[in-house]
Length: 95
Image 1 (spheres, rainbow, N blue to C red):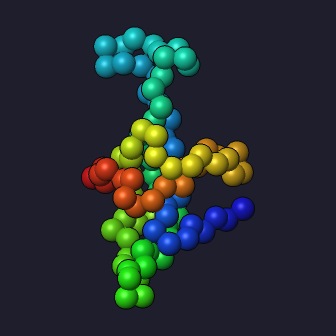
Image 2: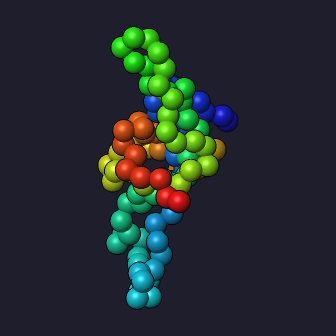
């Protein structure tokens, strides 16, 4: 199934939480933090300004991003965990 976000919304494939700490300690499922990193799989057209013009998004499909811990709405499509967020919830693009 394809999904097309509207306006300034972005569909993000959530990247898995880390299994180990830097020191090599294996984390159980209950101790893992909610992931805050994902890969963009679809973007909307952009935000509509008050004058009716569309302001394009700064991110594109394929970008890896960092987003707020409790940002967006979680959805499951085709067995994939996806997140629909607004562009303003994106903190940074990972280069």
